[in-house]
Image (cartoon, rainbow, N blue to C red; front, top):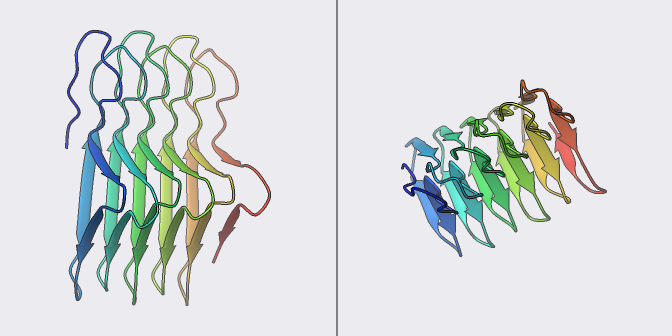
Length: 193
């Protein structure tokens, strides 16, 4: 999906799965989702947003791959590539692998995360396959706080069984500050295998 928007338009998401929405594959089927945020100069042009209790992207046995690219133009801010919040879940059961890849938007505003997994109940998990999260912070000019991967607010990233969890984060290449590669915040935030 590709978000729209022009001028000062805001909240132009490439893909939204919210309020109990479900993207799923049965058996060994794979799930592949790609989202690009819109080009409005307002804020919050996420590539992909997954939020709310029972909102899920899942496979019963195949791989799950989610790729996001944050949008935004001008001084637009908060253009995350991929945001999971308030109980959103990405998962694969059996031996399926989970791959989440995000690149934050390139505008001059602040806070363009590659991948954000925030708030209790939000998870990226597997039952036996690998879980890999790769994020590149965005931004340009003097933009700040462009973090590759953020896990916060008691969220969880975990591979089960014999799976391995990998976080790969690169901070934004700007003249601003606080462009961390990986940030883990708050009590009960867990990254584990």
